[in-house]
Image (cartoon, rainbow, N blue to C red; front, side, top):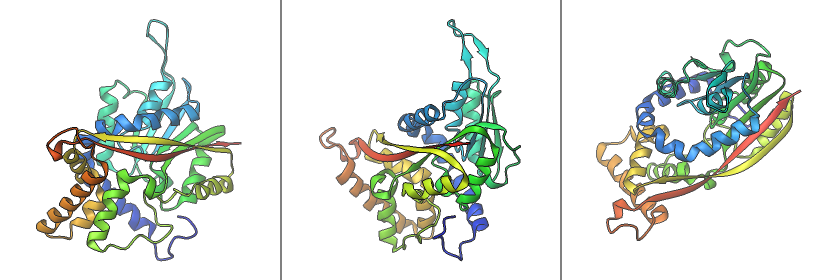
Length: 309
C-alpha cells in the first residue's frame, strides 16, 4: 500500500475480496483467455526479453492468473538442438496466484502445452509465500503488482527471493485515460450508478500508472538499474456484442457494482455501455448490422525492469 492509502484500508479484507472476485470471473476467463492473449502475448514476450531468461534458470511469476507470463517464460527455459530435440530442461517456474479457480485454468494451459513438469503452481498471498531466500534468477508479474495492498512489503519479498544480480520485471497499466479497454465501460457504469472513485492509493488497475511511484518504491527496496518501456496493446473483437460479452464475463469490478441492481437496471446499464462502445470504438462500414461491427481498442502498458545488486 502506498503512503497515500487511506488509514482505514484493511489489506486483509481486500485480499479476501480479491480472491472471491477473481474466483467469480474464472469461468469467464476460461472462455475468453485466448482472445485476451492474442493482444497480451507481446507483453509476455517483452517481459521475458527484459528479464533475459535463459535455459536452466529459476523463475517466479507472481499473480500469474491464467498462467502468464509463466507459460511464456517456461518456453524460454527449454533448450533444444537444431533438430528440435530437448537438451536442457533443468530450469523451472513457480507460478503463484491468490485465486484457486484462476490457477486451475493456468494448470490446464500448462498441461496442454506439455509444460506441466517445469511449472509448479502455488496458491497463496504473495507476501506469505514460503520461498527460500536468494532462490530465483528472475521474478515476473504481469498486471498484478498494482493489486497488491502492501506494495513495499511485496517488493521486499521479491527482493529477498532473488539471487544477487537477479532481475524483477513487471507490467502495469498506464493512467485510466490511456487504457479504455478497462476504463471506458467501468467509467460508464460508475457514472450510471453514482459510484464515487476510489481514494488515491487504493489498489486497482491504475494504482501504479504514475511510474514514479513504482520506480521510487523499487529504489527504496534496494533495486538498481531501473528502466521502463511503454507498449501499445491493441485488443480486438469481431463485434461490439463480443466485447460486451467479454466485459460481462471477466469484469469483476463491474459485476460487483451491478450485482446490487435489479435485472432491468443491469440490462439498461449494459445497453448504455453497448451504445457508447459502438459510437467510440466500432469500425463503421464493416457490416450493415451494427452489432457485428468489429471493435479495436488501443491501450498503453508500462513494462518495468530492475536488478538486485
